Image (cartoon, rainbow, N blue to C red; front, top):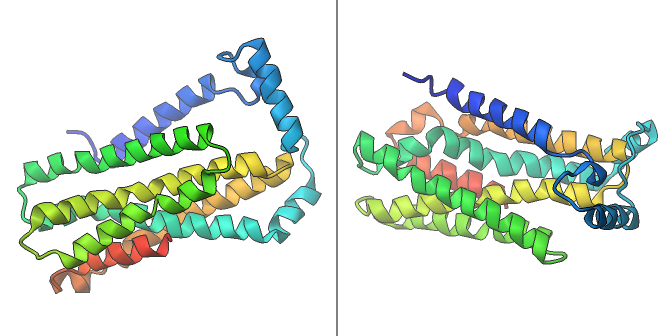
Length: 239
């Protein structure tokens, strides 16, 4: 049998190696661009002032720490990941608690990941095709999650299919964190500052994943819908 903890980690590591080898670190090294496209991308970067220089400047690091937007990204990383961490760790238990068998529980987790993938890809396409939409996408991706929380709290406990659909809707909010990385890439100038802001967003992401399981308390297991309340609080915090 596969270790459920090591298998996803191994897949993530393999994907990381593929991305490292295939993804370019600058437009000029993008093998999938034509020469004209490389020139156009380089001109866009120069016009935006977000260059591709690799020199480390401590003044930019100081500027990043003094910029309020840096800490907004950090808080966003925490609050947006708390719901993700809770759903990743306890989503299966919630579906099983709705009254489904073990095998059906495993099958019913698939649509939640499908919803997540569709919203991630859709958010990426929309952000790429429509100018100045990334912040709106980050906000609107929370709306289905809010609807899902309302569904979980308002439907009767015997309406297991409706509550399952409500749980699936909670997975749309992950698009917000993904788009936030592109917001940094396109709006933060300076290699050192951009790196610092990105690292702090990732640290917030890690802190949120660590904190998420703490919102599910064993003593509340006897209370009928404690898990749903926890998911609701976590998804609300990401707004």
